[in-house]
Length: 199
Image (cartoon, rainbow, N blue to C red):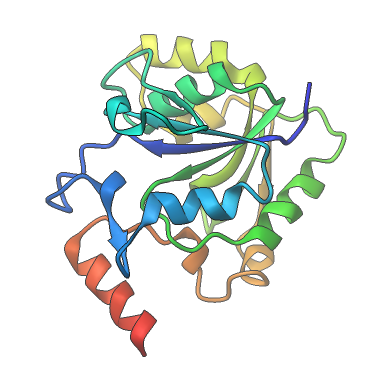
């Protein structure tokens, strides 16, 4: 089995704060989803898109799936992606994260190395960044048990797993302003991001 050959893009959120479906978000006339795929395919052989609208991806060469355990938020998407993954570890990113940092992805791979880990996640102070993280295919059963017990929090799941945490100071060596973890959740976020592109 390939160790780090898979990237999972979560595109199944409700996007209620944005006002339209974020998986169709465009930056400079190009769909953000397409930009993510373009960046990821240089680093990963397999790209899995987890979406609540698989019909919009018919004909693409990437693997498309939807939540198996429905209406459980991002953790349900991670579960569906890991079930389909053909790699031991999969990199997980959300479809509204425009600032991919390939150098940091490679650093996370090195941090996992040959250790027997359930994942590699970045800390922001006492908080975690659940996306732009690696998760092992071996945690599928733990996710299922977590979700079936009506727990949806990624944070509470990780507390019971063997996770490699990268601290904030180290991560800021790659992204001093933390923009590699930026989510475009609202129209205000999008407008600010577009303004910064111009300036």
